[in-house]
Length: 409
Image (cartoon, rainbow, N blue to C red; front, side):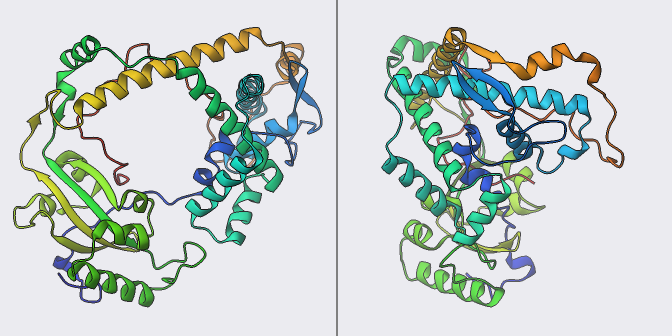
């Protein structure tokens, strides 16, 4: 196998499409889901100190609504018409109301985390972000947060998560008869398609966080070739990925999961699927490639040359069915619990009342200069728990359980 310093043209068997960059939205995943008080400016036509709603007497201010608009519109809120902005505010406020109802339930059920748990979770988010302290703080500010609001949001997120886990822990495992019925009714979903399973060590020439020593092309190539040498010398690929890879797959030992031939054709550039599916590339072989400005050391872990029908006795299938049935039941129970909690809560939505009382103040006209139409409404913040799309369990994909696959082009 050639090193990156030698890699050109046809030697690149496959151009790997890396997963999306780890953004602050992922770092603040819990925080964005559970917006809290603190900081943020009011938007046009809104008083940030004004009460938007109350939940059992707990005030939700307009500043919280405006922060939610800012986070989700991503700087495009100025292109919304008054009608669109009002609709977006109502959606965000509804999400905040639902979150507040669930947090109050979490307080009653004693699932609020300790300060130590909150700090540990934030430290994990910072570490996973691979950002420097300065970069993290900058992204935090741009998202409308500060350290205090981040802690409050994280506390709320963990509290609701623990509440849902407590509620859904009452669900029994599905019976064998239910497992058999689900499998027999969805046999078409249990087919392992022709494809490959890959693992990767990723080296990024860009600075991705504190302690990153590969901050330019020269240092990245040198590091990648050093890692190739370690692999050639027989060092464990997964251990090297965990220690050196600059990609979130490092936490699974570099495992990128199983991709069918169709997945490969969508996820990789022209000719890549054929290269990976070719018998000339042996299982266990290492391939060095470049893509998206990054350097990849790929290991072919498995290849299936034909579609294979899976049975309940195939590795991982029975567990996949159990998890699918269990997760669907948990989603339904959690959504029902939230519906009951909402029904029991005393909610005053002053923003909605304001719209009802002043229907003729809303305009559908876009602001001058908004040449690129924004979405008619801003999608509401995700609520917890998420209601399932249907009462029946979702059909599982016809793949062995695996981490997220590469982003498709």
